[in-house]
Amino acid sequence: MITRAHKMLFLVMLLACVIMAAVLIRLRNRAQDRLQAEASAAPPSIAEGTSTPPRAVTLYVPNDLDGSLTAVERNLALPGDNNAEARVLLENLVEAFHAPGSTHPIDVASGVNDVYFLPVPQSAGGGQEAVVDLSGALAAAQPSGIEPETLTLLAVMATLHANMPQITEVHFLVDGQPRDTLAGHADLTRTYMAAEANPEPTPVGAGR
Amino acid sequence: MRWTEAAALAVILLGCAQAQTPPPQAPQMPAVPAPAAPLVRPGFVVVLDAAHGGSDPGAHLRSDLQEKDVTLALSNRLRSALRARGIDVVTTRDGDVNPSMADRAGTANHAAAAGCLVIHATATGSGVHLFTSSLAQAAPARMLPWQTAQAAYVTQSLKLESEIDSALAHAQIPVTLGRAYVQPMDSLACPAVAVEMAPLVAGHVTEARGISDAGYQKSVVDALSAALESWRSDWKQ
Ligand SMILES: [Zn+2]
Image (tube, rainbow over all chains, first blue to last red):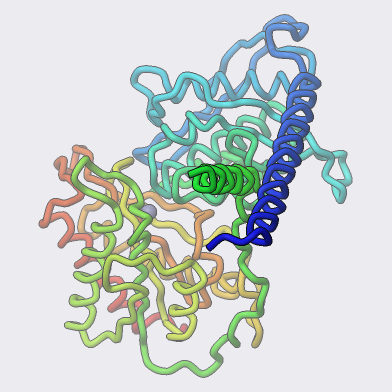
């Protein structure tokens, strides 16, 4: 038996539902607009950056069999600004992972969305923290294990620190989001000291 | 009929409204103080932490082999081998479950262990990878911050790692050594080493052997139990 009061109550609740849905949809649209605005204000792509003549850089490529990092010299035309320079360095590093006969194979063609820089407050020498935004594709293709995941992080840190010594700290994101681990092991919640990956004088993580 | 349609619409609208709400934040590890560092220890106890389990399969080692099963099998075999040598063993899991990192550290720290092994397996590399915490050694204290409890044990962890390294070398199993950035290592209030077993890649002294090769697993378990046997006489020094 549905009384008039029941009908009224139901209509009021229905109206409340419609209003709530409308408000939430509007909020979502606003958030989307904001994200799009932020994305369009992001730094220009590498292609648009001004390139300088090629210079010698050092990439640190891991060897999974002995846990070492090997210095590989390359001549690269690096763009003028820091973000794009770091991104070109790391894209070349990921290409080395992907290359045939790689000693640290990761089956992905492109692995870094972006690199951002933040000042390190307590740093005397104007040190910077590099926030490396890895692609979800790299994280998905990264072989799971303490050693392979640690070596990927160390290779990124060593390559950044060797070529851009102002980078003293490194923090990792995946597709713009914080993540617990790279592929189930290596901790991505912490900020790393870039010098921890210093491959000199003995190879990092080298065995006997 | 009109009312049922209206009710269905209301349910749909409510569902929409709920779908708009953001997902809950991941829970943060509480910054609670660790249990007091045991100054007077009981007998020689070893903690074995078989990594992953339950909903966390760990690495997919082969299409039919998950890391969580290999780590549990290794933990069980090692427990038997150690008990046969008269060594007390505490495990963080005995079945296909995934205790939280805090629970694993809690079990280990409650045992006041002389040695903690965190057991992993991977399809990458060759032989056994040994890792200690990346924390710097800190002075021992009665109260230890939970998240960096391992700092008071780093020197001892390196000694235990060296003991295991020697035993594996004796068994002609290649070893790589490193510092790990992996949980729950930093929260362990005991000499702690992460032991990650990889397949054997053919080399000048080794032949290729898969990670599930029973003979290879036995030689790793034998080497680990021999190392812990000698650690029993060395750990207090
Ligand atoms: Zn694992």
